[in-house]
Image 1 (cartoon, one colour):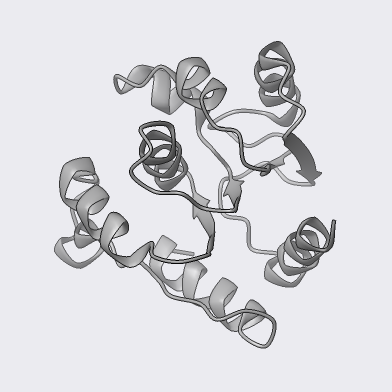
Image 2 (cartoon, one colour):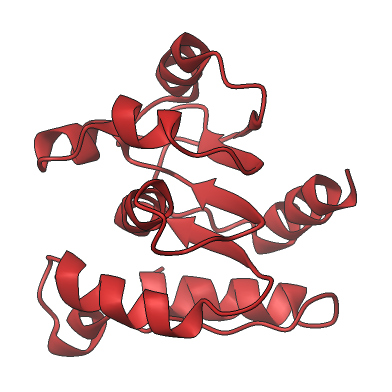
Length: 162
């Protein structure tokens, strides 16, 4: 499932509980593989007004963490799905430094054997940060698709209820 279709399904799953808005990345339309972080960051800053929570997946998790760490966006909570920790490190991000600067509640959702980072490895990375505002939830699976939208919706609702 492509990321655009995935986030639209997540929106549909949560729309009875939350008002939602999707940031449509330009590379989804152009068909290129790489996100332009500067352009997408500016777009995200424009839509992030008032009180809001962000759900982001993969590279979008790092766009979100980067802007939050820099104080350019101020979400009240973040849900980061398949956060691709190793990808971020290989693409010029300092994941530990960015994550350490974020003080809002953050839920990391990762699959047991997600090829971008396994749950066990992500847990080690997050545990090293010793951040009481970070939580992790493991979903079964060995891909980066997160196709269990209703299961993800349940996880998000439980996170927000606390």
